[in-house]
Length: 475
Image (tube, rainbow, N blue to C red; front, side):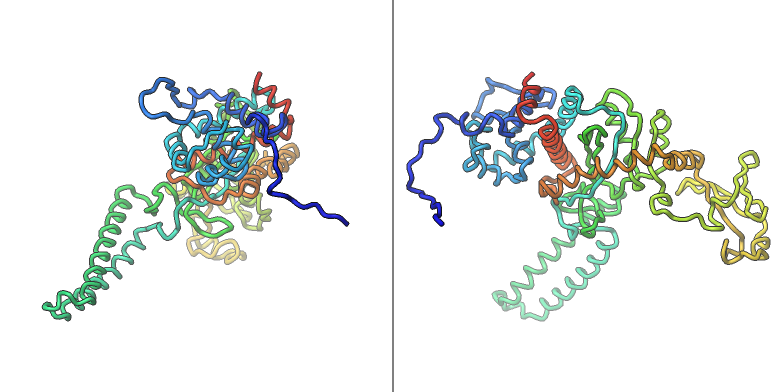
C-alpha cells in the first residue's frame, strides 16, 4: 500500500486576499455578522475617529476577537494573541490585525460594563428572529471558581488563630536576637532573623487590617486576592468562587438572561432572575421553573403574585421524603382559631414569633398531655410538649407544593434538565470553563455574559444554519 508524505518545501500560492481564507459557510462569518449587528453605543463604548493621540484598535474588532475566541475555548489573552498569527479564521476575523496580549487584556478589563451588556442584545436579537418566545422560563445556577485560592480567604476565627501563632513566633525571634552578640552585627544568622522579623511584622499588620475590614463590612469572610468572591461548595469541594445564574427559554433552550452573584446558594435568586428576564422579554412569562435549590417561599411568592405559574418543588418533594405519622402534615390547622390540632385532638396554640427564621411557633399548653401520650418519644421528646413551626406564608408554600404536583407541571419540570442544564454542560465541558479569568464581580459578570452569548450563537447556528443566520443578521 502506498503512503502519502508531506513536503514542507513544496511551493504553494496562498489566496490573494484575506477574504479568501475562509469559505462562505464558515461559522466564523456568523460571529463577524453578530458583532457587526451590535449597537456599540448602547454597549457604552464611544467611537472617536478623530481622537488625538496614539492609534488604538477598533473596538468592534476587539469584541469579535473576544467573542469568537471564547466560543472556541481560547479565553486567555496570550492564546488569543497567538491565534491572530497562526489561525486563518482569526486572521480573517481581525482583518490581519495582531494586538498583543497586554492590549487584549487591557481592553477586556476597561470594557467590562460594555461586555456585560452583550448578552442582552443577543437575547433581543433571538426574540426578533423568533427563537425565544418567553412562555416558560427555566432558572438554574452553578458554582464557578474565582481567580483566587481558598487559602486567601480569611475569617475572624482564622485571623485570631494566625495572629496568636505570629505573636509567639515574633517573641521567639526577639529572644533569639537578644542571645546573639550585639557586637557581631555582620553575623549572617542575625541578619536572617531580622529579615524574618520584618516579614512577620508585615504579615501581622496585613492580618490586622483584614480583621478590621471584616468588622467594618460585617461579613463572615474576605478573600485578599479577590474581595468579591465567596466560599462556595461544589462537587469539586470547597473553594473560592462565584454563583453563576442563567435563565433559559423553553422553545430552543436559548439564554435570556445571565447573572453572577457572590452568594453561596440559590435561595435568594429566583425572583430577581425571572423579573430581569421578563424585562428583557418585554412581557411576563407564563411559567417559571427551577429546582429545589430555589425553594424560598418569600422569593417564590413575589413571582406567584404576578400571576405566573411557579413550578419549584419543596425540599421534601425533591427528595421524595414520605409523610411520617407525626410530621407537621398530620396536624390539622384551624385558621379561625389560629391553632393546630394533633392526631389525638389536643390543641397547639400560638406561642411566639421567630424573627430569625420568619415563622410562628405553636405549642401544646400542657406538656404533661404529651408525656402521658402513648406516642411520647416518637411524636416529641420534649418535656414541654410538641411544637410546630408555621411559616408566615405557609398557605403560599402549600399552594406551590400542590401546583408542583399537577400533571402539566410535571411535564414542564421534566424539560428543565434538558433545557437549562445543557447550558452549563456546554460552558464547563465544551468551552473548558472551570475558573473565571477576571477578578471582581464586574469582571466575572462580563465573562459570564460572553460565555452565555457564545452558547446562544452556537445554538443559533445549529437551529438556522450558517448562510440563513448570516442573511438574517445582515438584514
